[in-house]
Amino acid sequence: MDIPLHTIAVVGLGTMGTGVVEVLATAGREVIGIDLCDRAARRAVTSLETATLRSVERGRITAAERREILTRFHTSADLRSAAHADLVIELVPESYAAKEEVLRVLDGVLRPGALIATGTNALSVTRLAAGSAHPERVLGMHFFNPAPVMRLVEVVSSVLTSPAAVEAVTALARELGKEPVAAGDRPGFVADGLLFGYLNQAAAMYEAKYASREDIDAAMRLGCGLPMGPLALLDLVGIDTARTVLEAMYAESGDRLHAPAPVLRQLADAGLTGRKAGRGFYSYAGRRTSAVVPDALTPRPGQAAPAGREVRAVGVAGSGTMASGIAEVFAKAGYDVVMAARGAEKAGRARDRIAASLARSVAKGRLTAEAREGALERIVAAGSLDSFAGVDLALEAVAEDLEVKRGLFAALDKVCGPGTVLATTTSSLPVVACARATGRPEDVIGMHFFNPAPAMRLVEVVRTVLTSDETHATVRAVTASLKKHPVDCGDRAGFIVNALLFPYLNNAVKMVGEHYASLDEIDAAMRLGGGYPMGPFELLDTVGLDVSLAIERVLHREFREPGLAPAPLLEHLVAAGCLGRKTGRGFRAHARR
Image (cartoon, rainbow, N blue to C red):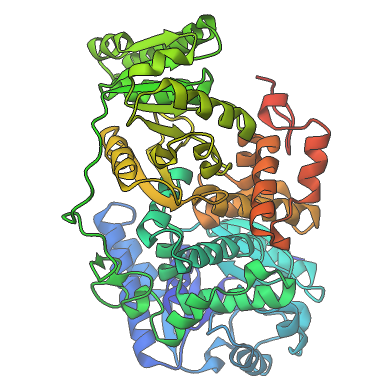
């Protein structure tokens, strides 16, 4: 049955409601904005005027089209103004009492064929529908902030919702230029169900003083390509809102990883709810502004740091993709590089791989031919670690096997001269275990590059309890000289990025295993609703399911959280040899490499 949705009422003209009004009015709908607060109504009108004027100035619409959009929007303080609406979208605060009161009044106002969509992302759509006189017309329509920009809309049906209502709202979302994703009724739905667990873990990481807020946010932006770091995103979403969503998720799942980090309660109770309050994890120039201002926690560039050691020559142990990429980075930055592999032939092939990479950079105009030749001349391929005798920094990028790495560090301890910094690129193993394989644990540190090393700007600098200040200062200075961004973290499983990324990926797999949503729906939700450059299943197939499973096992073993146990579906696929792109099949089928 076709249900036309031409006249739409929006109840609640806060930030989200105002954005939804803009989306609807711009798309040609008659819009009635309803809010008890006159100031909110005026602010919604002003916002639409400002947004449409900006669109005219940018050539997106004409002045005449702007006038038509503005005439399609009317405001009211009375819910009875929605009497002739085909659809009401309620966006009042996340409270059962508030939302149930709106639905109760609407039951006495709307004609029977009109639909009601709640914008909740934490409360039960089924419970709200059950309290309505017409539960079949109640469903969820979850927009993402800012609504005019974010393309995702989650359409949430309960067991009481009629298929015709779902079809009508799904069709509306498409007509608005959005990408609708079907979701079942559980807290967080698809996108927020995955996103808020990740945000909560980031808040807990900060609260534990494992890493600074700046380093956590930089790590996730530069290591995962996210538009915002998790703590900055919490400030944007609203710390009180995040706490409400997490409380609902924890009540449903019982997963301790969903229990709101205490720091969220502390900030919310203090009124430090993020941008809207002018302060949250960061301090802002004013309420509802994005401009961050320095505060007591802001690092001061002028602060004196311990002096590091001079580094001119670098040894890279390994011959794989990561080793080659790291050697290329150092050579382009002007360091003399020795590449050591198990045999001169392997080392030579690694150098050839670097030569090809540099040639591609020249072809793309990113590097001059002279710079390419200079970088190649600075790389020497060697067949044993004996060639590291004169290096100032020895860095290993061999197999992710602790005994292999410990054996390598024992060998480096014998070969490298006094004062040489010894670094591991491990992404999951304890750095201190490598350090204790040497007689100089104070010189050992982690330098976790990201793949591909020439392109990725992030380096996690992993300090153990035995690492000296001088070693730490040396590696931070070297990292900066490579035009990379160093972030400091302690020696525990996952460091910053993997400790936050892989539980999120694991939860996505669990969501599929529970038949809550499909691969395509989840990938679309996280790209369009979370701003991720890749959906979780695209990323898992790219990283490798075996690699992902190994990291998740390490995290589970280290933190002993039941919620970190690897998803059974992931274990089954790895056992079947479905490892992702490299085998031609993972969560999806791929052409073999």
